[in-house]
Picture 1: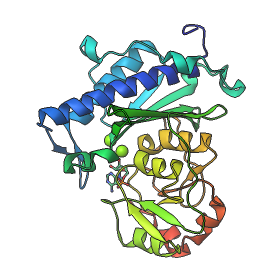
Picture 2 (picture 1 turned 30 degrees about the horizontal axis):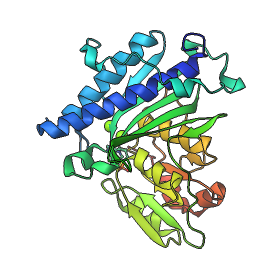
Picture 3 (picture 1 turned 135 degrees about the vertical axis):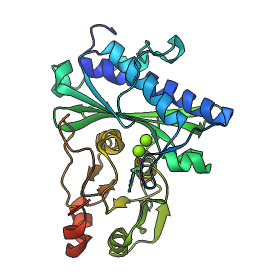
Picture 4 (picture 1 turned 60 degrees about the vertical axis):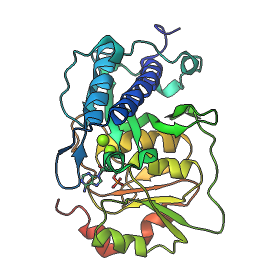
Amino acid sequence: MATTAPVIMRLMASSINTAKRAGGIIRDVLKKGDLGIVDKGKNDPQTEADRSAQRCIIASLTKKFPSVKIIGEEGGSDLNVCDDWLVTELDESFLQQSCPEEWQDAKPEDFVIWVDPLDGTAEYTQGFVEHVTVLIGIAVKDAAVGGIIHQPFYKQPGGELGRTIWGLKGLGTGGFVPVPAPAGQFIITTTRSHSNALHQQALNAYASTEVLKVGGAGFKVLQLLEGKAHAYVFATPGCKKWDTCAPEAVLEAQGGCLTNINGEHYLYNADVEHVNRKGVLASLGQNHSELVEKIPADVRAAVGAKL
Ligand code: AMP
Ligand code: MG
Ligand code: MG
């Protein structure tokens, strides 16, 4: 089964196991206690966990899929990793499913894998570990099609740590129980560490009943998938393609929508600008175009006009 399944099914099955292994590395670094924090820019920290998780993911996927283009947040990675970090097994239960017809013939050179080895680094360093996710997004040509969102610190009912959520357009989602957001309310999920005046102006344009400020693009999309929020609003540049590729694919595989604040989808081919210049607007179970229209014209014009 594993060797004959279409490339996209093997990429998803391999990414599921690799994201889990990266999650283990992220827990181990925290347990050891030496985070090795480096500032990549203003409000943009990197830790030993970001670096090590990226090495594990890039080395494992490159070894299995040498002709697939992979772009990781932490730049070029050393492909020589210990055997313990090299994930070779595919998730067999994922492979039991049928590949959607539209992706059956996609070839290795049609794919770009966008890797955020640790989304929510600021929160990781501040002890809000439940906001942390590992994101592996699979684009076919321009579109975000498949995604893995792994939560290293999610507590399973039995006490075990870690949960892995996946989505593939045309197939669906797995690893969690979708819950609709409460009727009669409008809850927004948004950034807790990258706000500014324009972004605040966009938030104020919605008649929200509550604003949840949480870290990471992955965790915010999980708020939508589990019915804790109706919309994810981020009206400023700053998120990158590795932040949104996996969340977009999972959310849209569940029937939601993730776009820029003008309602346009981002492109995910290997040549695109990494920054999501026009912010992020995501929703599930809402009229997405109506949410787009609520953003004031002056905010729309100003967001991303210059970085
Ligand atoms: P947030 O919603 O602020 O947690 O951001 C979601 C993702 O986008 C995280 O990976 C952040 O690191 C990244 N991000 C958002 N805004 C910025 C920014 N101004 N500078 C650097 N990274 C950002
Ligand atoms: Mg991130
Ligand atoms: Mg990151």
